[in-house]
Amino acid sequence: MKTCIYCGEENDESEFSDEHIWPDALGGDALPNFWRTDDVCRKCNSLSGLYVDGAFIKGWAGGAERATGALEYLPVNDPGRAVLPLNYIGKLPDPNIPVDEVAEYWAGPCGANVFHFRPADEGDRWATYASGDPRKMKKAATAGRAYIALTSSDSFWVLASLASFRAHFKKATLFVTNASIPPEWTAFKKPDPGDPVQARDVSVLSTMIDAGRNGKATRLDVVVQIDSDSRLLAKLGLAVGYKTFGARFLATDYAKTLRSAFREPDLEKRRLLPVRGNGYLQGPLPPRGIGEILKWPGAWVLIVNRVDDLSIFR
Image (cartoon, rainbow, N blue to C red; front, side, top):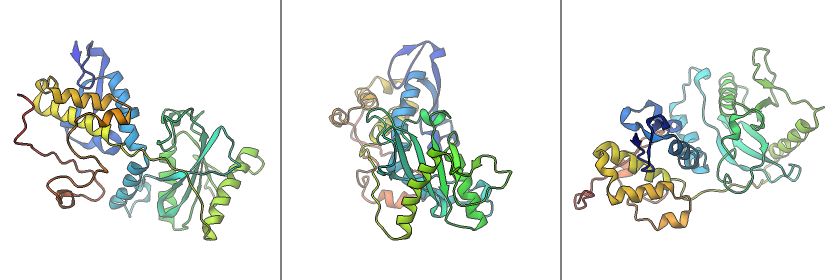
């Protein structure tokens, strides 16, 4: 039997799985073993990946950060390895889009226009997630249709744009609208004007592209979760405390507070919990200016402050 560090419940060892404390999607797989643990039950691992890590990774702010930061490491001599994150811009309010579907606009490498048509989600749970419910993106039947309109004829940017496009929409049907497709590029299709669904999709994206060419403003809808980092930071505090101090940390009142913050989905209830530290969007960390000194372009920096006048083991 083992005790899960995230929920505090005891379960059989077979109910536990490998957990990336720092999310794999943010580079966690390249970190040392300190940032992984097998002391998390499968239920909490799934909760973390879908609702805690996922809320930050799939949110507008987290996506923009990755899309911008990745440019710092662009392999300019190898377009096949130039797979960049796409930048989620928002949902299109075009009246031609069926009520049971959503159309999203993404900015690809070198300004490529990317459009994703997918089934609408039920309720507001996934409103802040780019591409909606991430579970649906893993299934071909619900991953939708994705189109890319290239903006550069340079061979490097063509290959980099298509590679990034394919990597992002792994299960969706992929269309290239304004470039010839070599026979070996079997992952991509040309839109079929005789197909009513594809013809409607092309009409929607053409309206958007034409507006940009003519300098006309286009409204996009985006929902931003302002505290998308708070549950993630509570999880990090709980896991780092455990990895640093061992099981005795989990018995402290503060660990219980972090556990509550990690598991609480309601923002107002979570704000009432006395969690120490500053979040991603909450201004500079003390001492003032340290974030500017330690920042690393294209990477995430976690700053842990030692508080000498506070003991959690009293």
